[in-house]
Amino acid sequence: MLDRLDSTDLVVKAAAVADFRPASVADQKIKKESLPEGVAPSLELVRNPDILAEVSRAPGDRIVVGFAAESEDLVPAARRKLARKGCDLIVANDVSREGAGFDGDTNAVVLVWPGGEVEELPLLTKAEVAGVLLDRIEKLWSERS
Image 1 (cartoon, rainbow, N blue to C red):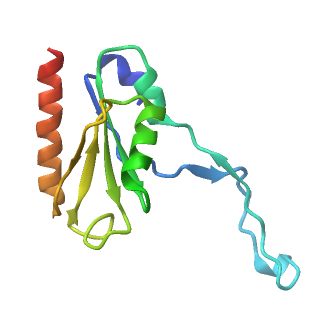
Image 2 (tube, rainbow, N blue to C red):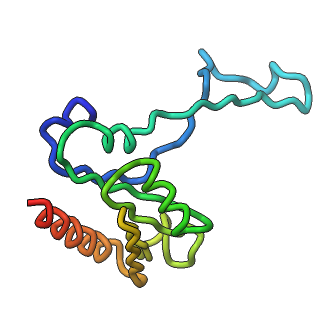
């Protein structure tokens, strides 16, 4: 993705696949029979690269939109992420909310802008959320032109 950034005008990044990954990978299957009874292998994690922050800090005049899947303190967490990442907009959703998040066709998101503006959308289909998001991106694009 970073290799193609120079020719990119818009980046919309969904939530990270994973914030962490295993520090090492076993060469072969770890069999429970090879461990003492009642002992499980330990798992050490390391951070994955922060692609959203890298994209936001890269030279160029592109629009960068990030997502924040949160389970508490939705708007404060989204504001912190927006400040850390430096993108143009954060789309935050409370994944613990009924009818929103990963396991359904609807979502309720909050758009958080660098100037402090917060726009809370009602429960919509994910296609409707995408339409609203594209409308906001188009407005942002026209303001920059």
